Image 1 (cartoon, rainbow, N blue to C red):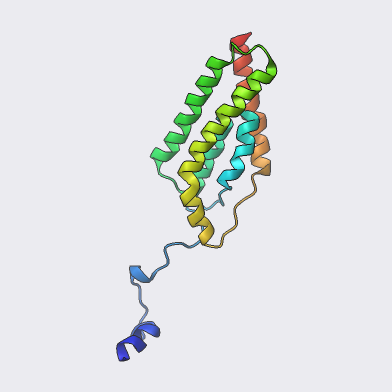
Image 2 (cartoon, rainbow, N blue to C red):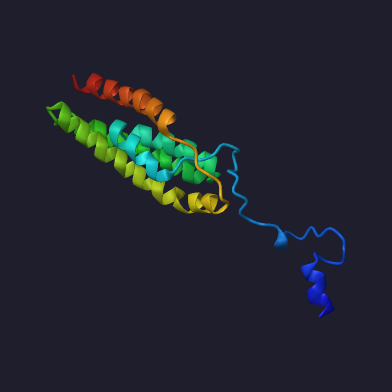
Length: 158
């Protein structure tokens, strides 16, 4: 009974620095910056294409503390989907067709991002921390990466 009482009081009066008693989820992002919701990356991914999804996914992965191999997988998925978009764009005669191909390619990259960041983001939320807003970075990525993609595609097609 005395042992149970000592454990409840935090040991024998000394500071206990046992690794087993330290919380593993503290609600802080490993990089210091709060991550975005991975689900929210879908909107810029659809609007601007796979490069936007890859850039936002890699930045968010870094904020979540993902391993370098997972960040590289997000980048590789973005480059592969962008290559597929460039390859499929010449047969598409209409601007709407080019946009649809870009939207689908962006959403495919977003699925990779979602698959790699789902569990780390849920662990981040368990720490009672709030995610950051993606409105301004999302708009900047849509304008920057989206215009870059369209410029490259129309430069190669026309």
